[in-house]
Image 1 (cartoon, rainbow, N blue to C red):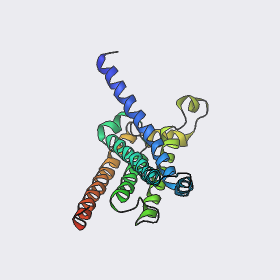
Image 2 (spheres, rainbow, N blue to C red):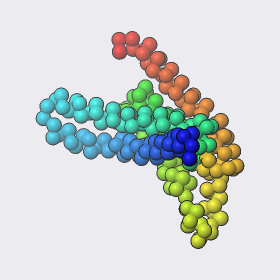
Image 3 (cartoon, one colour):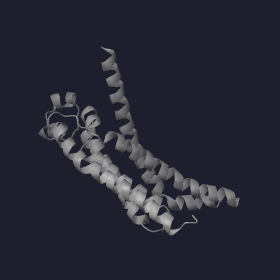
Image 4 (cartoon, one colour):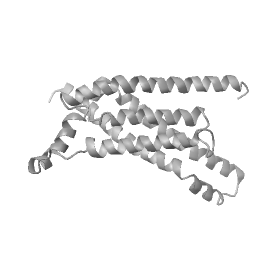
Length: 209
């Protein structure tokens, strides 16, 4: 095995591991964002006002940090070269990245991070939808029935999924991956540009902030 092959294999393994980890982090972020009543119940155990304020800030920042990590990994994966190298469920994971990015921008720039705040329910719905899409893609596409299983239990449905909906499946998966990239990548950029514009507009509207 040449040095180039070893380097390429390590690159593929690293990217695949990051993608798998980001799916779990997205689920964790969604779960933490949902348990606001649990956070409030724990505040009664904090005796100092400073600790209460730190607790409230921490419960928000942790969720936003996890979402930011998920979006960054999604951006890293969402390019033609990586999609051709690693096992990505298309269009599931790229679509989830767009939804996560939208939710993150709402939380960061449109007041959706506060329970009952503006766009809070929309952001929560987007995170839940993104996780649902990721779970379906991971369970039924990325981790579809293995070749060893299909050798003993042939299944046209599992075979079709593995040969059509995986980004590195040649040729159907590669074709769908390119189509997914051409749709989801501009949408991701549009969401991020909108988020940046919202941040600038908010700053102009409140110059003392």
